[in-house]
Image (cartoon, rainbow, N blue to C red; front, side, top):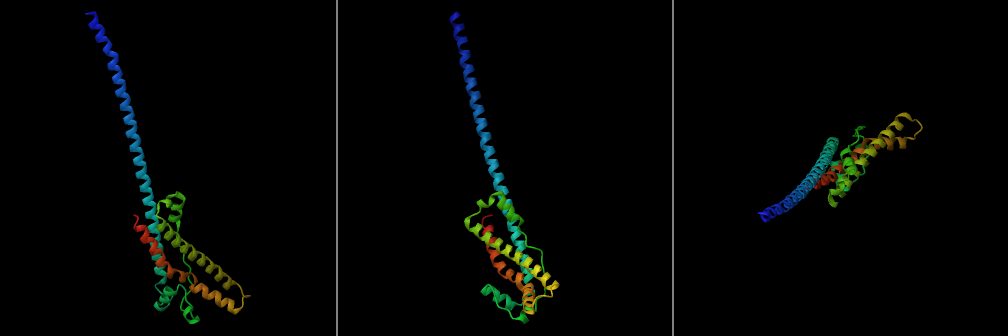
Length: 200
């Protein structure tokens, strides 16, 4: 009876050890599953934020392209065709005088800047990055020429010291300089839009 008691008593630590082992395994598995789920969720959120940022850039490019098309609606088709074929065109003074002075607000690039600052731009393919850089460089050029045109107009309007040829050149630039760049913008922005849409 004494031996049976000792034998039964000796089994208690063994059972306790198994309980401890099972408990540790459960804790480790629980921590591992939690870690995997957390990493998976973080990756999903990161991918979702990147998709949202890219979607904003896509919308911004489309809005800019639509504005450019609106600017060109009043241009004679013959001149638009010459611009499109050559990238630039010599216009007669008579052709230039068909256009009025106009100044539009700058084309936007806020979503593109946000994509760059967030670091998500590295998630784009090299081809998409190159086409987007080219598109926004074109937008920057149009904005620069637009500001220059306004500055030149102020000079022409306020200064009487300019010779007639200079005043004429400034006047012609103010009429067609910035808007002429928008003809090329449709194709350049279109390539960037198509490239982004293929990665959505």
